[in-house]
Image 1: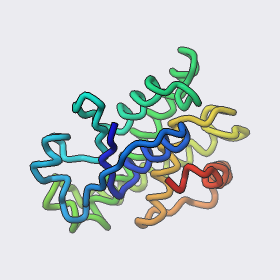
Image 2: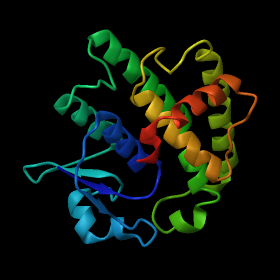
Image 3: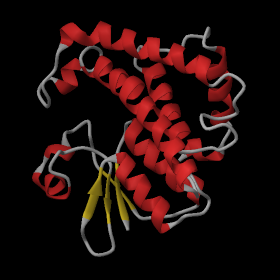
Image 4: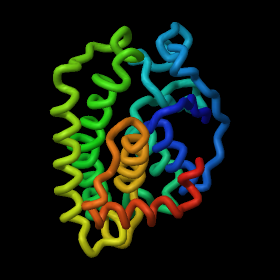
Amino acid sequence: MKLYDSIGPNPRVVRMFLAEKGINVPVQTVDLAAGENRQPAHLARNPHGQMPTLELDDGSYISETVAICEYLEEMHPAPTLIGTTPDERAEARMWRQRIDLNICQHIANGYRFSEGLKRFESRIVCAPEGAAGLKNIAADRIRWLDGQIAGKEFICGPRFTLADIKLYCWLDFAGKVGQPLDAANSNIVAWFERVNARPSVKA
């Protein structure tokens, strides 16, 4: 396997996932800032021009962060980061999906359509008029999640999963691009510090 890596929260999700699994793979960095991901060489690997992308041993490619992590979980089941039973897997996938659709996507587009507009306006369709609203939706859903994880160590209770990795990477990114975590979300603040202490965050 070979990981095509770059800056950004989604590649970091895969790096953290690999680190938690103890999997070492060759890495090739793609220069996102220079638009290398939109050049023919990378588009042949991933026609969406997005990052990250995983090259398999047979020369084929998997893109989309969750698909890559699901593949790695199946190939290297231990330690589990999604689940060992249907119930555990369903719980982790449910929370990962809620976090992805209700928080991460709004953080991403809130950034792309405002602070990141100059970088993204020539690459994707942007809606700068929607940036403030998207940021507000993300903040509202973070407040909702703060109540949901009261009394829990991690998103799925005692289990550290892909849902935690996804949320951590995106909240950490958000704090660097004008969407800081509100300290009033005390459960998420405490959760963030627990995850931040894990060695995998340095991946």
